[in-house]
Length: 450
Image 1 (spheres, rainbow, N blue to C red):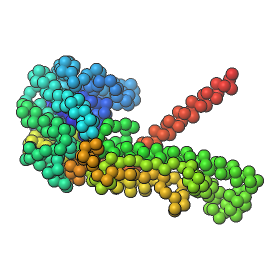
Image 2: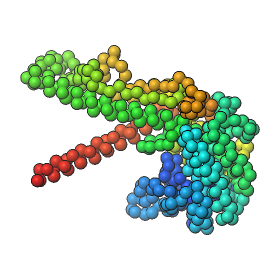
Image 3: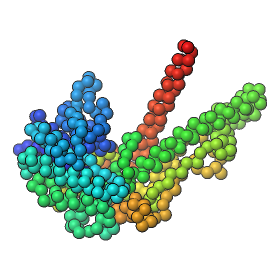
Image 4: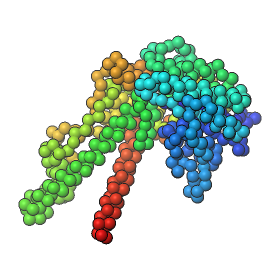
């Protein structure tokens, strides 16, 4: 749920396209959405079509360089949206080739409530500075200026299901119930007062398989998935160690027989000594309290239904909105909701229960991982629960499909998203494990050489 600004050239036949040597400037390119946007624009418009504007964090080399070492992206470091001079400098430096400017640098909902002044300086102030820089660069009124709004713009009076961006246009005085939502509204007002071809997208919670993220409301889902993955990793490691100790004790007692009881019949009865030993060792470890019982404390009530979207689907929607000919955009102020799918913490917990592949324990064993949810918001100390109560359960997918042919296709449901995120966590765990093993092997080899 970030903001962006964009401009693009329009050909004589109404189709949006990049002309030779024209580029897209992206602020906040190192974020989860920014990296995906860099990848999509580069893929669509070719090498050197993106100028990534960054403060400190670099982009992965896989984004900035091709397999043959070709530079795909121009990176500009040291630019701060809170500093007018640095914003104007980077826009002026590339003014002759820029056809789009995106601003993805914006605090999330919980971060905004924690420090609203800083958030306003980055969000509203940053947007104002971008417009000022565009004005000073003498960009034309036909320049497309785009903003990624948020479901946080909807307050308690908004529709609960299939909420449309047009509702915000028709109800400009509604109270979104948060500083986060009020700042988004101020940006829409700035856009309306500008000379540019303005467009905006209401973005739901953004799901992705990156290793880190900010402090928002819908980010509870990413936190829960990480907690579940860590619980599986710990369970597997602890169960394996317990199984090895159990096997060693059994072998020592039985004299090395194939079955757990020292006989071949024990192995046959258990359906194979490895699997049987694993089940018994895991059950024994659980009974002895060896296996940890992980609990994720969810800041939202279990029934809080919120709309989400996968990041790569989202980026395709943002680019499609930017590229669409103006005459195709029939919504008031060219505002659109980009819908993916909705789910609650309870739905997520049920989905995760189907991904539990640790050795089976007895039916009476408590779960190795569970989610403990809030009973409700408590008047301000838990802003995420308050936001979840205000925001709609779902947003409309109709208008974006009708006007620029977009809908979430790559990751269309919760089960697909859960599988992708868990797979990414598992891959990172394996990489850390291999790195640790290689480090130990290197240390051991060094001792032997001495």
